[in-house]
Image (tube, rainbow, N blue to C red; front, side, top):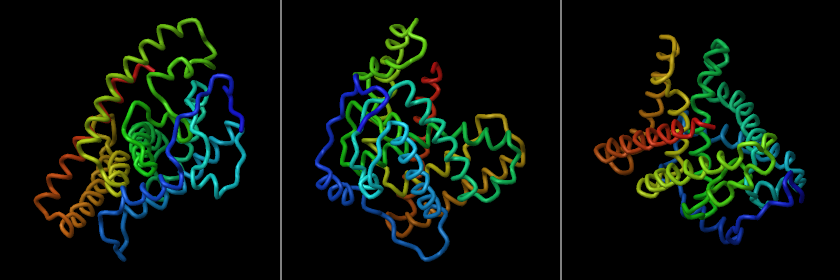
Length: 278
């Protein structure tokens, strides 16, 4: 298959796909009992799955990769280093998908003013990507090493920064930009990796955090009505987590775990602010 920067792409070494799938499924095994009642976390899961298919399909088309849908679903495609153009296009793809994801999970979203919709999408987009990328690296049995997902089908690391800028339309200040980006990756990725390795959030916890991050509007300008809606949904998700923890690790440990997860979200936000130079 071909891609926009085939002359500079270096495939990321991946584990054997068959072994990776088997091990990954056991590594990220569901820690919560299934429930027959309506679950907001399960609603997030279903719609996250739909969003993932859309992102993967659109990105592969962007790269000029055409493959059988079943092979794509098993992620049997090459993970290539991310470039400036792919990052910009994939971000547009993700934001478009989030505008479909949001009303499917949170029905009131469709009736919000357009300014509030954009506020929510912009505010959650990077945290959503971090959580999705972590889930997918767990499924692949990938250690939290030097690289991470730059977009849905690409990798990103300090070692591939030169490749990242290879298709940047303005090459005038590339050397300075590359140096700054390497510093940001080295500083922020190590913080995230350390926190994730310590906490090791499960898939269910990542999905819950996606919902919580979507409605985390405390640090942005918002209306009272939006804050009330955000508080309600955050409360629903946290209540569901609390109920699930009560059946597994107990109320006390569950409360501690929720506090740790919220601290992880703060780490995401701090790293995001450090990367605002982009």
